[in-house]
Image (tube, rainbow, N blue to C red; front, top):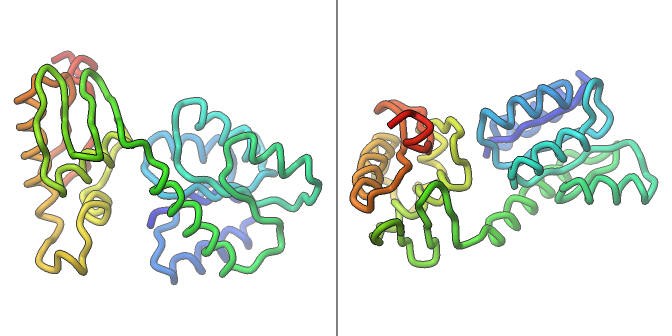
Length: 229
């Protein structure tokens, strides 16, 4: 799981990063809201953990900016404020949950698991980018014609469509598409193979989008028109 932590208190930042890293989470750090927005717009994360009170741009303004651009990544606010109005303001800004400082690290981890699980459950089954529609219920891509995807292709397409135009590593795609317990023989080399399959199928339905990237990644779902093609 990859997490973007925006926290300006260095001691708190390091403590959270250390704990979540032990729990097998990859944690990227930002010390203010503007940096958090920049990192979120250029990277892919499973959850945002934003402190509300930060210099430059606070956590609420940062999340409002991201939500305004269509970013639906689950988000948790950290706050020292206990007033009801402050909590309501944070939730209205688009947060999925909040924690009041001080808090137990185990509770933060539980909240992260909870909001990411809910996000998976409520992800829309119909996704669109460019002239392509994807129905996640039956793994069907539709443009000028329709084509059926395999289950791994469907999971990969869904993840790319949830994060269009973002740079996504081969490792990230692998962990979101293949369950290591169910597919013990799969490895990251499978990612490039399935990227190739999906690009062939996008060409087959005359899509105006494609998955860009070299064999080792990273990859990005982009519009052919934006690349002058």
